[in-house]
Image 1 (cartoon, helix red, strand yellow):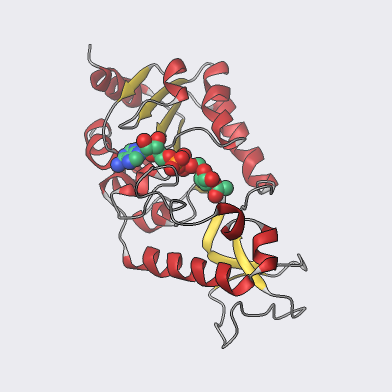
Image 2 (cartoon, rainbow, N blue to C red; image 1 turned 45 degrees about the vertical axis):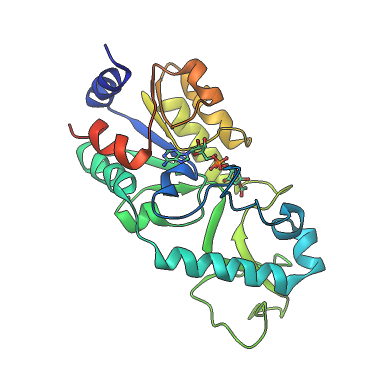
Length: 242
Ligand code: OAD
C-alpha cells in the first residue's frame, strides 16, 4: 500500500484528530520558512537581533519595523489549499484541533475554528514590561514602537522569542490533545524546535497514529505510520478528500 493510501485510510477512520503545523504549511502562500537555506526568513538577518527581548531592547525600532514589514506581507497573502483542506477536514471531523507554530493567522483565515498558537500571533502586540496589556488592532502612532496605553512602555509583538517560554495554557492544552488524539497529522515542520517538536512523539507514545507531510525528511518520520512526501498544498487536498 502506498503511504498516501495508508494516510487516507488513517484519516478516514480517525475520530480525534490533531493537525500540527509549521512554516511549511504557509510556504505556498508566499511566506518563507525559517530553515530554508536560501529563502528562509532568518537568512538575511541575525535572529539574536530580531527575535530576542535583548535585541528588541537594544534596537526597538529596528525590530518593530521588521515585524511591521512581516505583518504587511502576511496581510497581502492568502491561505493556500493546505489551510483550506485542514479547515474542510474540521467540518468532516468535528473536534479537530489545529496546533500551529506559525504566527501568521492563516489557519483562522481559512476557516479553522479551533487553533492553538504555540508561538503567538504577529497580529497581536503586548506590553514589553508585562503590565498585562495585549492588543489586536492597536493604533500606530508616529513612534516606532508605539507605547502601551496603560503604562507607557514600548509595545512588542505577541510572539515567542528565543529564550522565552511558550504561553502556558496553550502548551498544556496542546500536550493534553496530543495525549488524547488518535491521529496526529504533522505538516510542514522541521520538528527541531522544542517543546513544540515533542508533541508528535507524545502522541505516538500515547498510541496515536502519526502522519507526516513534508517534501523533506524530518525526525518525526521515524515514528510515523505514514510519511507522505510533497508540498502541503498539493498533498493535503488529496489526503482529506474523504
Ligand atoms: P522550519 O523552517 O524549521 O521548517 C519548515 C519545514 O517545512 C521544513 O521541514 C520544510 O521541509 C518544510 N516545507 C517547506 N516547504 C513546504 C511545503 N510547501 N509543504 C510542506 N512542507 C514544507 O519551520 P518550523 O518547523 O515551523 O519558532 O519552525 C519551528 C519554529 O522555529 C518556528 O515556529 C519558529 C522557529 O524558530 C519561533 O519563532 C519561536
